[in-house]
Length: 607
Image 1 (cartoon, rainbow, N blue to C red):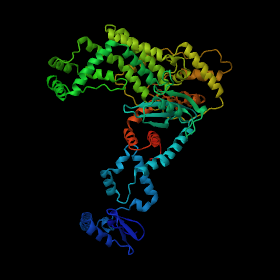
Image 2: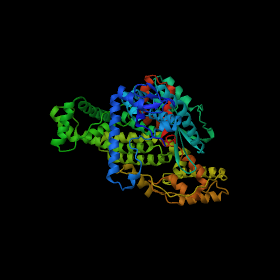
Image 3: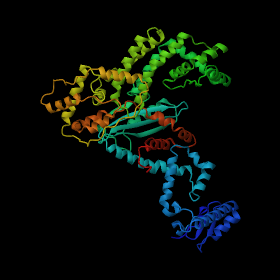
Image 4: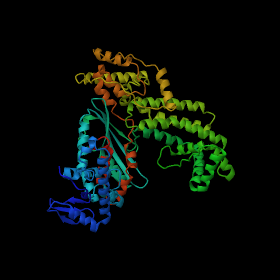
């Protein structure tokens, strides 16, 4: 194998007889195949690089001699040491295919960085040192790689994943920033034959304008089956719309948005609580605008009260619980703020108002817990009925316990009324009832006799139609979903309801006819003990192969997520992309890049 001089870190082979300097782009003939002329060029034109090269050679030769002389009998002494040689150049050994791979990896890096990063001197110098022969191209070059080659590969990958799902649920989400930008997305979720939950984004639309009519057109167009990927209508179980993409005059299908609306309306109807929130905002704004006030408040906490300093949380527009988080941060610093207000005549919060702030936090805690649970993409509609029941129980308890506070009692009562109204559909919608029943953590624990009858009839009808379409799966060990309760109020309420609640394990005896086998199967399922709430229900179904005839309807009804919250996090993680739009990136290409980014963690393209 021929030796390769380390001078090649500053040159690359333009052809078999021509070498080009990476530092000044001058060409040199190599008809004799030697490197003397290349060294002479470095010595005369680039003395700094030549000195580094010379010092490295002297040092490595010294190391070679020391290793050879130190242990002449050691086996490594008999090896030919070529320490002065650099490793083989991957670009040189693999040719164009490796160059293309480097181009692709750099293009994928731009999913999380502005296109301007490839023009920054620091990045350019880093790449030049790392691999002098790699040429950094223009923005349009990498944009073309992303929006053509990688976009096509991603679409093919998502289509393959969707083809493995017999049923999918769609969800639409729209998130708009405070500077006119926005993101509209269409996502799908489903359960594969091996009971793995899958979620993919089918389409993204980068919005860079504020006209409502255009946004409405985008929402309409994204639901029209004009996708490159095929989404058969017969595969679609349901469509879940968030508050911004809901049909005009209707409530959102997204459970998170519905509960946020309940909280918002309850707060808007409570003038006393709004006035208390206004007081807290004045205090927070005072410290936010005055560094001296912040320092003095910190002094009070650390020196006078000997406590670790806390930070006040400002009110943030468009954040559903921002007001309550701000009030909670003020309450955590109650003693320090009270001392400060007495000294500087700042707005006073009276003792009964401090009590109201504390009680308000206790009322809001279950709401925040539930929204965190529903916002998890793997949480399905099976959790909606149980968590609504738990929140209803919590609010009824609050109304009874906090009767001494007119403000908070009124707030809890109004929140309960909104909850009953906006979630009244879940106990009559067969999609929610079936999902809850087919979740072995809940089954019929939250059903009335009428609801049990509806579910029994629906299951029997579906199983009768699907008797010839049974999918058996090999058993596997049941796994737990990691969870930390942290004294959760909702956890304790749910555990109590599941422990003390009566579950009717008998099926209704009407309309069964000759379906005795199906009736026995459901009786067996109803008799099974409910699994722990921290267990994975999909893994339970995969393990219990005796219920394989129910697998098709399980995958159907547990495919729907509890909420549609895809756009929010993706929009916040893509602020650099909207800056690129201002710099000339087309909205169409920005949408393609968002599509790649949203699905990239699920793809195999990075392997």
